[in-house]
Structure formats: structure tokens, C-alpha cells
Amino acid sequence: VPTTGGELYRSWRRVRGEEAELVGLFRSLPPAKLPHWLKGELEEELLVDMLRVIRHKFLPGEAPHALALLEGLLGVPRLGIALKFLSASDRALLHHSLAAP
Image (cartoon, rainbow, N blue to C red; front, side, top):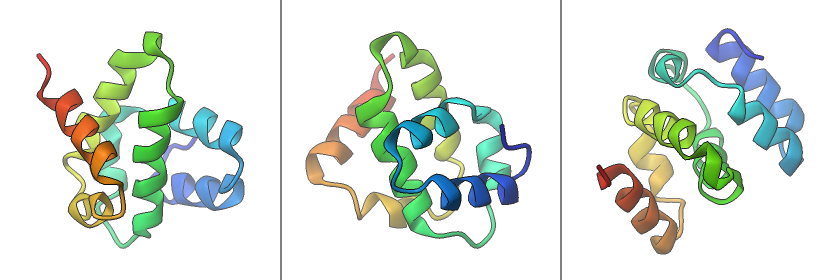
């Protein structure tokens, strides 16, 4: 379980391309730490992977944690750039998820 943004980045680089490992990594993240951990220079691909995995791989019972991760990502300065790499349907679904009460 990463405890810093640097550890998250290194863990992501190590498991990139391994769906099950990415899911486990992103499930372990504390949502409130994301804006702090991801505020520096980073690859937008990490954010794209996070958004994609949260959208497609989290289970229905994990919705509160998934939503908390998405809300945590809202504080990441480069999120707008990463969103451009998502499909229009994924962007719409993420927007709907965040707009839901």
C-alpha cells in the first residue's frame, strides 16, 4: 500500500498493464491523500488508468470508495488533461457519478 505519491507512481509503473494488480493498487488508495500525492509532475496516463479502472473494474459494492476516489481526483491539477484521453461515454458516466447525490 503506497504511503506517498512517489510510492504510488512507482507501484503504478511496476504493475502497469496488469489489470488485477492495478485494481488492487487503486483499491488500496486513501482518497483524501490523492490531491496531495498527485499535485506534482506526473504522467497523465496514471490518472487515465485510475479513472478507467475506477469506472470499469470496481464492483457495485465498492461505489462509496470509488466515488470518494473520484472526488479526491477532483483536487488534482492535471485531471482536466487526463479527462481528454477518456472516451466521451466514460467522461459522461464519470460526470454523472459525481453529480449524483
